[in-house]
Image (cartoon, rainbow, N blue to C red; front, side):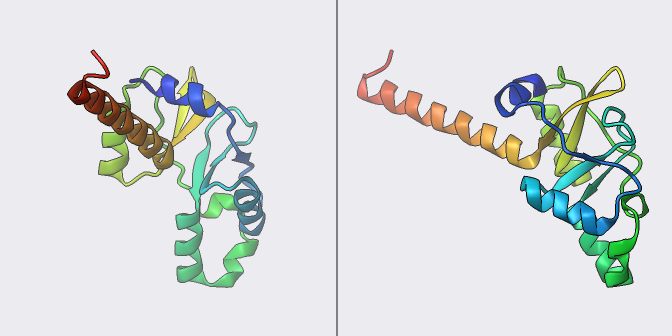
Length: 145
């Protein structure tokens, strides 16, 4: 399975924030969209960074509530690992596990095309396991050939 298969199911909508947006506003955006991370982008197309709830928590622990007025660029990860839609899901799973990422932007020719989260990967895996269980049960009972 490829990343493009995941995007086909979940869609290609990506929530971005500009680097100068305050961390407080970032939290409102994350809550509004029910997501755990946003891509940092000056123009909504180029990935300038990524920022997650984890980044906010770590900054709060280190610097206190005053961090909420700082720009997102102060805490965002600037060196972002991206993948292309043709990437194999297993390779992205490995990347997420080894690098401890929960969100990976999908980029084509330098342009943001989607984001895959660990939740997307788990949801897909659960679907595969349910299909396999159903097929095996059908095979055992003779309901499927």
